[in-house]
Image (cartoon, rainbow, N blue to C red):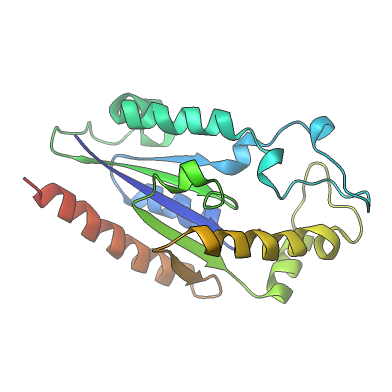
Amino acid sequence: MKTLVVGVGGMTNGGKSTLSMSLHQQIPNSCIIAQDSYFKDDSVVPVDSHGFKQYDMLDALHMDTMMTNVDSWRRDPESFLRQCKLNSEQTPPEDEDVFVLIVEGFLIFNHRSLNELFDKRYFMEIPYEVCKKRRSSRVYNPPDPPGYFDGHVWPMYLKNRREMESIVSEIVILDGLKPKEELLAAVCKDVYQEIRRLMDKD
């Protein structure tokens, strides 16, 4: 049994979730684990000196639970695959198939233990103005307070980006302004090449 772990990271509203879901639909025997599913309850997320909730940091996430789920896939990707509802109509995998885990999130490359597991890394980025406009059109629970983007979200993105660049190598930066189809085609081609390489080994 062969496995491949693909990381799709990036800034808020950069398109990482859309790309990840499209990849999942294109790639057989794939599952998604999304970092946004592991946020802690709002009541325990710390507040900074400006009164902004500190969501854009690893401490706001149940990373231990996320790692447990990633490890569960690594131990038995076939069983994990059966639990992925979107894969329920896919044909059963064969012994020589490659199982693919797509891990998606804004801080996946900043978590050292998780980052070490990735075979392929992609990072979606868009300009400040576009990011702010997209963020303002989204509805969050709890909602963003006034000034939250400039006072917390963007500064934390820049901080997390610098940290990521200091610990991550072999990452492909993707322009989130490019057409979705173009981005999907490029990443799919890259991932399929890796799948073929794995299947050709021994």
